[in-house]
Image 1 (cartoon, helix red, strand yellow):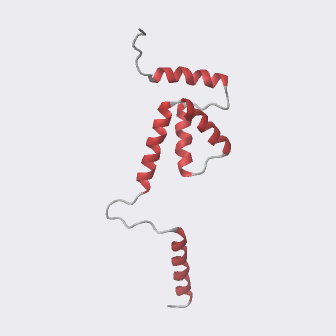
Image 2 (cartoon, helix red, strand yellow):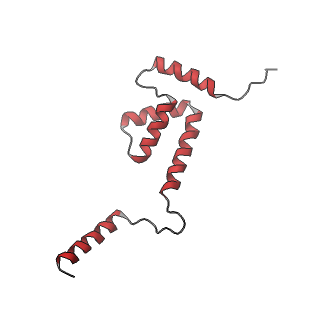
Image 3 (cartoon, helix red, strand yellow):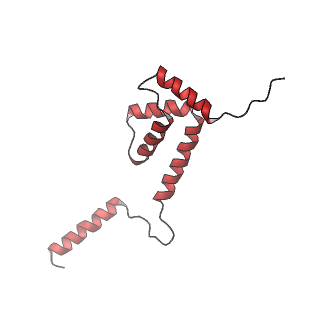
Length: 109
């Protein structure tokens, strides 16, 4: 019978991370860099290289996959209007409203 093995802990990921940083410099992301890049990718599209580095890290690091899911959830909740707030206006509609207001001020209405 095999001995009981505790669930994977953070220190094992740190050892693996340091090993991968040594073996794949410029390709492998540290967990901290992964979290920063995921946060940036929520605000802007990731480049092809960034996307590949994120996929590689995500495939290996379970903790960062969980962290990414939490960041995505927080981002989604932050973008939703709160109770009592009007829903956001679509950019195209906002532009039409601005155009109508500009036309009305030019025509003296």
